[in-house]
Length: 80
Image: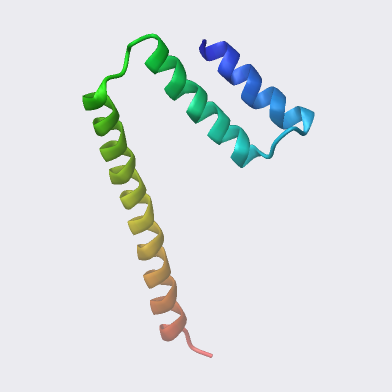
């Protein structure tokens, strides 16, 4: 199933059927459906994946925030 999902995602992008962002969404939904169809994912697993995604997104957001704060501090301290 994974090679089919990759083929559909990448093939759809190259064929112009959808954009890269939409291709990522198609791949994510395809992976979710495949894992449910093969009974590899239960409600506890879904909850863990959502929590893990939220934690990773928060870490990335904090990195951007730190970069923005550093950028502001550097622009205020630069001599003109």
